[in-house]
Amino acid sequence: QVQLVESGGGLVQAGGSLTLSCVVSWGSFSINAMGWYRQAPGKQRDLVATITNYGSPNYVDSVKGRFTISRDNAKNTVYLQMNGLKPEDTAVYYCYATVGPISSWGQGTQVTVSS
Image (spheres, rainbow, N blue to C red):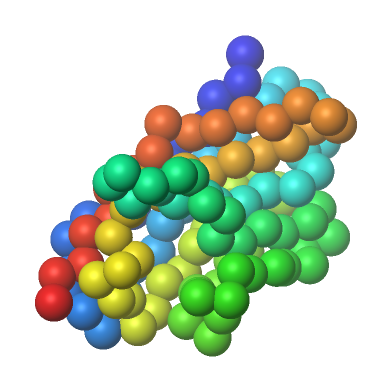
């Protein structure tokens, strides 16, 4: 059974920081890419950051220099350190993980940035 459990969301003032975590349970399979998407109210779900199983990160332009994605393969956990948060970062953040061609998603965690 595949399970992704996110934590770390919350309410923060503009300029503040939050760190999201996502623990992945996927049996004995090795997890390939991991990452984070976000979905603001009334908008589509958009990619925020990804990281390969070798630790190579990739970011959407709007978060470059502010967000840092990392992973701990021993713990099957992916993190998203978010600094310099802006009101436009407000969204539900979803982690994902892939094994081969199959991707699975977490339930989402709310991040709200007040101005």
